[in-house]
Image 1 (cartoon, one colour):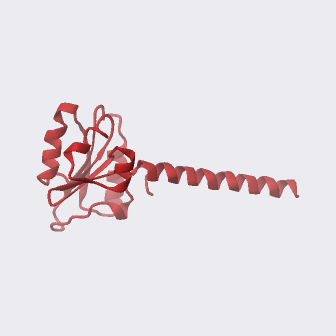
Image 2 (tube, rainbow, N blue to C red; image 1 turned 180 degrees about the vertical axis):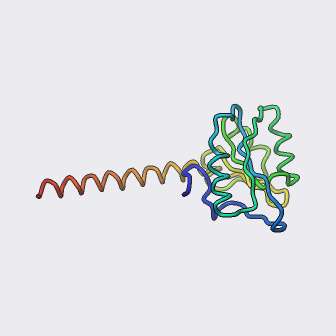
Image 3 (spheres, rainbow, N blue to C red; image 1 turned 60 degrees about the vertical axis):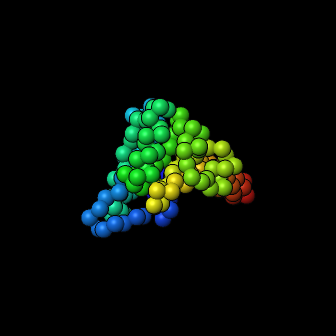
Length: 150
């Protein structure tokens, strides 16, 4: 089951050093204790037997550069970004994908050999939610039409 506001499982950074190596992933924000991301992501990680561990890190605005340095050193394969860092993180990254550039905000950072790429998957999640709602509305209309012709 894909979570609308997260990368799908086939889009996650799979960097296997060996089958016994577990890569760290995290969601960063402040506050963060309310986040259900670790529960959801670790469930999927276990289900698909992926070599990752997902955690929540409370990161203040002042701590953001230090966490990005840890990401660049390879301590994390990637992070999800939430309030208040979605814009503040941009100058600390090496590049942004088209979605992040258009939105002016980042919610996912992937590290590839110390190069940090920012993504924004919020639009994809919102779009999928609208598409699902549209399908539901059309289904309801079709059912109503069917009932009227009975």
